[in-house]
Image (cartoon, rainbow, N blue to C red; front, side):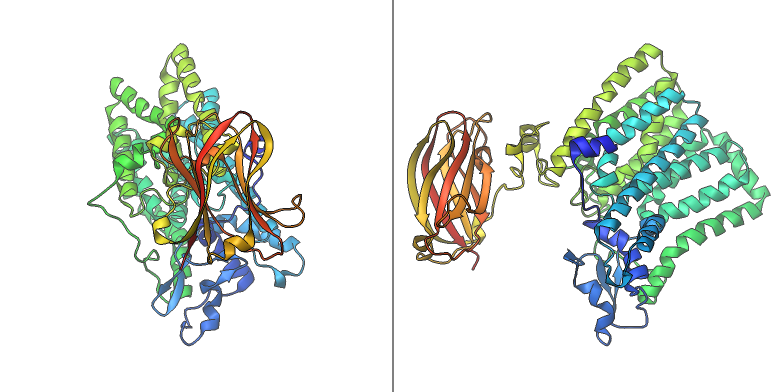
Length: 563
């Protein structure tokens, strides 16, 4: 993993972002800012107590993390991840001098989250190995499952790029819960039941909706007879039930206590107006869409469905049906969430939490097949590793969009990593209709021959400014936009020294394309204007790294104002 981060995906200096702020900020609130306890204050009478929850903190937007709850604010995210990261956070905090000046988001804390995520990934893999061993899966097959789980899915991405998201922590807790539950079903001591109950409380603390994993317990039991035997054991030993309830409640109650300290209420719905549309689940989109389909971005998980079919063929109907029951329930609930694509994220991130159940059935199938069949299937499954590595790279380098993907755009950038594809999809369909057109400058037709750099248009800034104030500049021209076309167009401002220009914007020529490639069309690209007032300054368009002759027809500049 370290080699992949350092040599392919690139180092990531910021691990706390987006939803990660909410999961992580409990630590900052408790150990640095001392502003968690606000139940005795109101926003109106004590605005200073809530200042940090409503403003920018060190350049990071607090909006969306703390939501209004009556006369107070509450962190809408769960506290489980903060609890798991606390040792890494406190160890980092103890080594830093002058703690009064810390924000909790400096680089050492960003790295602490990375190390914490990496630790829990490996801890989860250890429990996954123990779980698979209970199913007598061959050790070398377990290793194959572990490698594929990490490198063939979004685990890699959520281990460092979005390491403050809750998913690898949930996966780790899920592995431990599934192992202890299975061990108890196999007749091991009631201590496994107590551990399973406590771990179920941690699953709840991490993401409340993940309590759906309890629907997988019949599958883990393996048969109705085992369920009856275990239930009879609990009825005969009620003290075990009581201890289990105490173990679960002792962990789960941490969230209720934190809610009380923030609001004065033990039970609340922190997500406010966000909820489920159970009458309109988007299950087909969730599983198969190019926008964020589970099997499109993590195709290795299709092997779990193959494993279920195999179970039916082997007359293991109970296991197949109970696994499918859990799977359908999770897909239904996940697809009913108001934002079924789960916002700015790589792939269907909620399913990272449940990966051990997907790979467990794959391992069960592989372990029972003839070695030649396993070799073929393993070879096919191994293709998911480079596939996922490339898509992870594409997402992190702005080639895949976080929610704007469709069939056309997905296949146009399929496994492409060239620089010219960066931001191409991200810059699609600018809403010029919401801007006011100020003026345009007609340049005309231009033929560009092979050249390392050539200025194709130059105009004094005074001439542009004299026509009216503008905020956005749009460059437009006709071309075929062939995929193999090289070169970039650079928009820049130069003054007396062209060798030291004010860089404005530069994109590969391919990104001007709007309607498909290899056909004559009008393409355009807009960028935010940066106002610079310098004497003798000029605005220039230049092309760079052109390897062949091509033509720009009807080149023009169009200026827009936001007012």
